[in-house]
Length: 245
Image 1 (cartoon, rainbow, N blue to C red):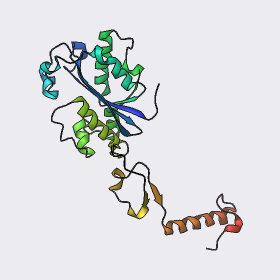
Image 2: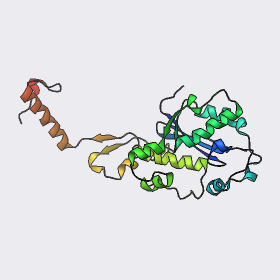
Image 3: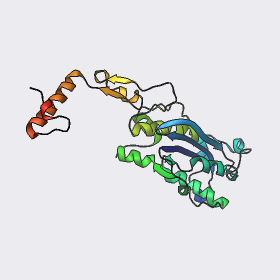
Image 4: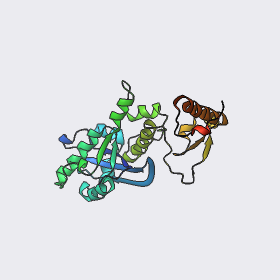
C-alpha cells in the first residue's frame, strides 16, 4: 500500500551494463525519506552475482569478484529488500537501468512478482532534472555542481553513497531544502521579514512564521477600507468599522 510522504532513494551497482547479456546486481543501496527528511533507515547489501565482473564496470565501482565471493545471493536478500521499499515512491537516477536489472533478478529466481513496480511507484530523477534543466548535462556529478551538493567523497561509484548524494540533489532540485533533518534539536522559530535574505531558504527549518511589519499592517488596513468604500461590503469589515483615511 502506498504510504503518503514516504520515498526511498535507490541505487544499484552491477557486473556490467546489460542484464540481457547475463549481467547481475552486486550492490543495492537505499535510504528512506519521509516528508522530505531522512529517517535514518537504510537498506544496504553486497550480492554475490555468481559471474565475472566486466573490466569497464570494475573501473566504475571498484567492487571485485574476490570481495563478493562470500556475500549473499540475490535470493537471500530479496524479501528484506521488498519489505523495505513496499509502498514507497522510489527515487532513481536513470530509473530504466536499475529497474531492468531488478526485474531481471526477479525473473531469474522465478519470483511471484514480475516487476518492482508492483510494490512501489517510480520517480526518475534524471527525467526530472532534464525537465528542470533542458539542454544541460544532468548526470549526478553535473547536478552536484549545479546545486552546490558536496560529492568530494565520491571517487568511485557506490550504491549507498550515490543514494546519499542523490537525496541531497533531489531535495535541492525540488525546493532548495537540503537539510536532511538529521539534527532533531532544530525547532520552529519566528522570523521577522526584514531578517530574511537570499541565503535563508537552505538554512530555515521546514516551517517558518513571518511577522508583518507595522507598515505592512497599515497598508493591509487601508486596502480593506478601500474595498469597503468601493463595494459597500467587505468580508473583514463592517460599514461601521471603516476608518477615515
